Image (cartoon, rainbow, N blue to C red; front, side, top):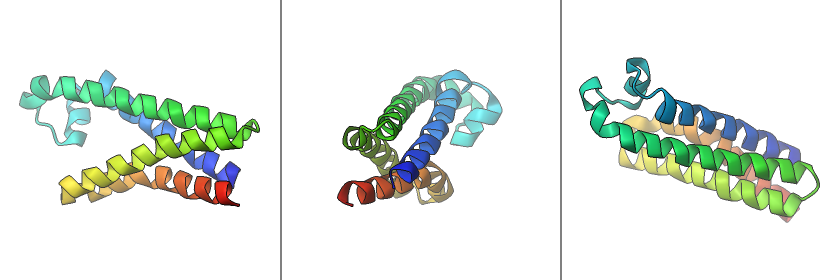
Length: 128
């Protein structure tokens, strides 16, 4: 279970690093900000929020990666605790996304599936 939790935590982390790149590095590109349903004329107002959000995603990704590395290195309890914190936050953010805008179900599923699986396998590993 630790391996499965770690695999899904790494996948969730990689996805959230991609979100960081989209939101904090290349958000000004029309094909990128359109993914976030932001009109080009609104980018100057939204850009600071997207930039900040990208760093939230990066920090969660780092937590998930460190947790997975620790869990796989034999520090299972500490590692899985970090995975639970990081991936639980990712999954909770996906729930907030869909709760605030039902049209974002697909985006929320993309954002939340790997973290949810990491959480489930972490819990199973911890209680086993």
